Length: 289
Image (cartoon, rainbow, N blue to C red; front, top):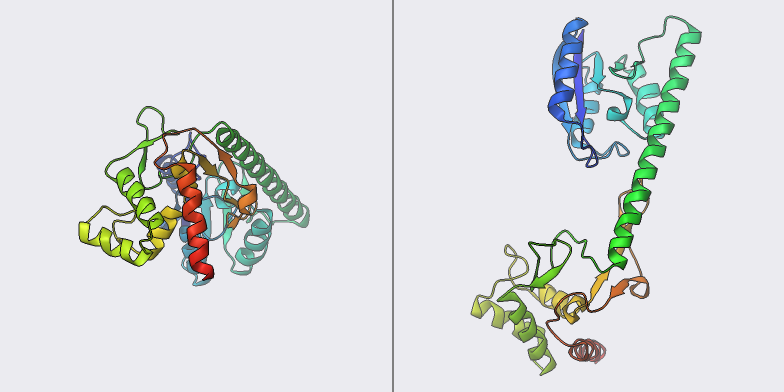
């Protein structure tokens, strides 16, 4: 029987590895007479979503009849989403006559020798799916609370520092000045406040060959405006501008500015608050002229 093995790790998996999963599944296949013809892998991707490259390719090949059985370490590696378990394990894969086996949890959609066993197996898989969803929800809520407390304490939790700053080597949650970028930021604010247009600032930065926030795109009106609008340069941490829709939907939504979290005096400012708000007023006046 032709087998596909599916390997997945989420960002939270610390005691797991793709290599261990692969060794387990290939041994199981060999011991049970399956011939592994396909292997699909997703790393650092949640099992709550089905928009995983490896998973999507596996389902595409399943519809083409490339294999007869899918092997995964357990059901949660395949999916942690109750609706997806219903959609794929209980509907589409049986329709395609493809069996699913979770090696360590005993899930096997091929155990259909009688109605009682079939119903019992389906209920077990549904219970596993619900437990897996609850686990993901709890992890998500715990992580969100930890990050929220870090923000309230003035720790920087962004993936990259704003232009003009860098993360401290001693504390990655603290910003320190980075030169010459910090001086460029200060120059941009002062020049704009003195009446220089954004278009002129772009040309000036290009002529001076200043390092830019985006090394590939270079200087543009967009990059200048983003710098001039960043309150971080006054020494504040401004975070909580977006959030995910839910633990199941990782799409991000914008939060109104009045709800952003602002913590003052957490790193060395590049400009004064007076300069920042003067520039904001000047931008507003230019846009409304």
